[in-house]
Amino acid sequence: MSPRRRQQDRSRATQEALITAARRLFAERGYAAVPAEEIVAAAGLTRGALRHHFGDKRELFRAVFEQVESEITDSVAAALAGAADSWTAATIGLRVFLDSCQDPEVIQIALTDAPAVLGWASWRTIEAEYGLGLIIAGLDQAMAEGILTPQPVDVLGHLILSASIEAALVIAQSAGRPTARADAEQALLALLNGLRTPQHPPT
Image (cartoon, helix red, strand yellow):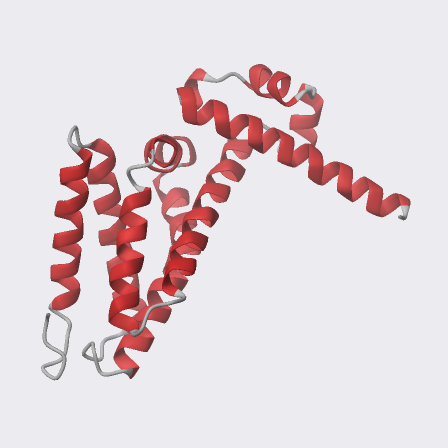
């Protein structure tokens, strides 16, 4: 193994250690309650390692948040793989996403801290980076199959993403999350059903 490759492996291992430690602490107590010194100590590293790889605690949080978002997207994509058609895929994907919104780690990191720490615009940009592609691909397929009426796909994709994010926030902020999650699914499916063609009426 070349010295350059060894250095890359060490850098990657250091980054992973910091992200793992930070993710656990942020999920347990929230961003504001976790000092950078505690994160580096939990990772068995120094403050210099944090500065070198991420700059500061806020950028480390961004990396943690993106890891959480990537995992949610991967779980939705995996659930879609066996769907018989685009409508089945849409309903399965919606359920997997809404289920993730009841996870305490997702609630704390992605739905509570991320908007406050990163700012609303950056939070929404990252949400779109990970979720919008799946939504647009699903809409394209559903329109090609004649299940949904033709619409401007990019605009509709952003609107559905926005509705899904708002549903996620409703679930996160509700005292009765199972009920809020069920209500969110019913409302989002009603919106999607309204886009179905006469040849494929709501079931």
